[in-house]
Image (cartoon, rainbow, N blue to C red; front, side, top):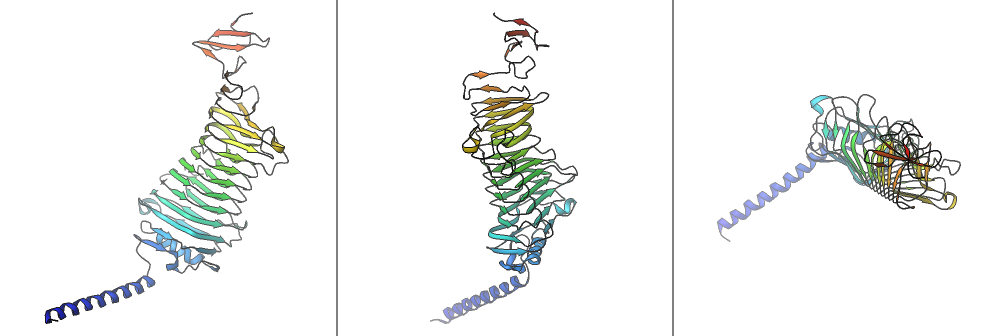
Amino acid sequence: MTDMALMDRRALLLASGGAAFGAFAASRAMAAEPPSTSEMMSARHFGAVGDGVTDDTAALQAGLDAAFSKGGAMLTLPPGNYRITRTLRIESPEGQGGVVGRHFGISGRGARIVSAIADGSNVLQIASNSTQRFLLLDGLQINGTGREGHGLVLSCDGRGAYLYNACLRDIVIEGCGGDGCQMVGNVFESQIFNSYFRDNHGNGFTFAHGTHGGILSAVHVFGCVFGQNGQHGAALERGCYDVSFNGCYFLLNAHYGLAAGNGCTLLNGCGFENNHTAAPGPDPANAGMRLVGFGTLIASGAYSIANQMALVDAVATGELVMIGCRGFGDGKAKGAGLGRFSGTGGGRATLIGCMGAIDRANGFDPIELGGAEGGMRFGGAWNSHSLPQLGEYRLWVDGRGRLRLKKGAPAADDDGAVVGT
């Protein structure tokens, strides 16, 4: 071997040894200090054990504090059972100091937060006091004992702070003493995917406007299950209505599968099964969904063998449209049908290709196109909101069973002219 070759080999060995020593030093440094917020952080780095016995509260809180500071990062929880004894809190500062414009949050696939909280406090509470985008909660499971409060609270309640494009994905929340999850306030354009909210003492999920001016809007829910909760499967409260449910299932909840007291933007391809487990028995009001206001329901259905007796119990104060929906039952619920419909003011309902018995309450007449009887059915009373219209003329059936016609809206049952004999 030439002298030059020996020198090249020695240089290579020295460089390799230096690299190895550098890697060893770097690993020691990583063990001593957390990575920068631009990187993925691990809860293990902050001392979290995940054996289901150790109290991991302080370690998880330290990890969350680090990950959600300085612009936000992702905190990873390796697989394991992380026992906590008090609320895990995340709160962004007010103003520009808390603005985040890239993905940040918690990734916990295979990780379970096991609550040992016994004072009614929430398990995980995230409050945004500034404008943030792309918060991601991924693969996390929260298990309660019934002695804590809500499992997860995500809030942005106040003027001037907005939470955009938040995403809950593959989340499981079970057994909590309050609601499984609450989403409150200025949460916009956000999504919930393939998540399970079951066996919680309150609602499985509550969507709500805030109490300090926050407005929840454009939230989309896909392929989620809301089951066996102590109140409703999901509820839209405090004026909230702009939530769409797509391919979701609501089953075995104590009361309604979905309670929408101010309307619901969209219910698409959803199912309701055997809700109203707390009811003493079957009742026409025991619907899978309670809807007051307006809504659009597409290809959704209800089935029951117990107390649930309809897909929807609706009070239309605006436009209600149902397309291709159905309701039926067996056993104790053999008489279950599509729904009970009533309305106030300018409320209207249009049912297209729907199947199942219809209960018209307080003289309210939905317009029916197709359905079990085929053809078209309109309101028959002179003051119905769903009279057939031919150009400027209205048709109705008077109290004596005669067909009447008038140009413009009728003012009384005997208004207009009798048609035919």
